[in-house]
Image (cartoon, rainbow, N blue to C red; front, top):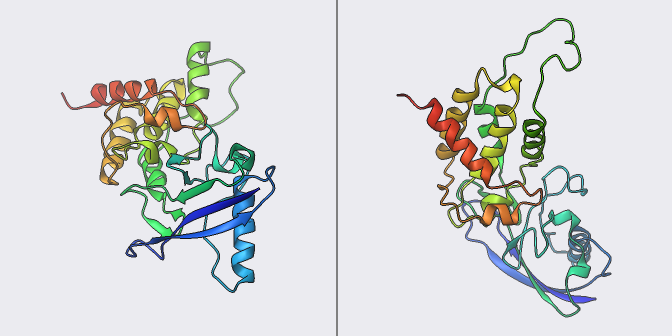
Length: 244
């Protein structure tokens, strides 16, 4: 298939950036990132600097890849960019590729953004108190199945940032909620539960993420289908921990 690519070029946070256009021929069974590899091979052959983009596992696990494709985070399917294939497009299509757009995610180079704000939110959550020594007996701490299932669902978040890119406010509340809730549902997360929620939401706001207005775009774009209800659970923990 032959497609027309319109891709973003930017040398750093202070650069205004611009789009460039190029026609590329690629197999329809190739992944989207493999298509970008083909693009870069052609650019290198022409003596042009390749387009910078993020990737790592290319298996939809690490959350490293992330592009806005034709206006949608990760593209037209609810999956990660690395798991999107060119058969999702048609021969002759024009595809526009941009980086995540958020104040909290400054562009480092072309399609790569700095998502270390997510790392600092997690760091703000601190530690959990656990007893050291001999391994506990199996099932010594009972966890209701509903809680275990919800905690597992929250822990599925890979921190790709699609929720931020999809949100009109650039909010990172779905990410923050997932990281708070999966510990708050388990016995090990109880001692620091209230302070953890407060510290992480303060860091979220300090990083420049916008506020949540419950539009649901984050949930719709999340490749791991993290439900928006977790934001309500986060809000309850924030209220419980707020000074009275």
